[in-house]
Length: 139
Image 1 (cartoon, rainbow, N blue to C red):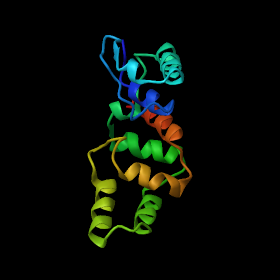
Image 2 (image 1 turned 90 degrees about the vertical axis):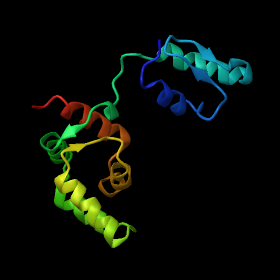
Image 3 (image 1 turned 90 degrees about the horizontal axis):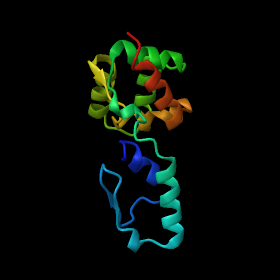
């Protein structure tokens, strides 16, 4: 059985873009199109896969959770606004991006602003994912 992180695990192993697909039941289709090295890598990914693993993108955060997560990582809304102002976005795009950060009812991990702004704060995908998963349970 494959969970929601399986595709990301394949990509991390260098197997993205290959002519394979999979079913929720654990069936993998297209092995015949892979080299032996790719099949071996695929088998390692399958063996290590946890179908119950959570991904940060599975959980939207409310404003309280999102701001608390940011503060725990040493980032404020004011710093985010400054980082947005420093981007190559148009004035209109910047205005709406800042408004989204200030006023969103929910925040989604897969929103394009997040990876765009992470370098401004030296944050990694792993660090943001870990903080996001920790914040999802705070009430």
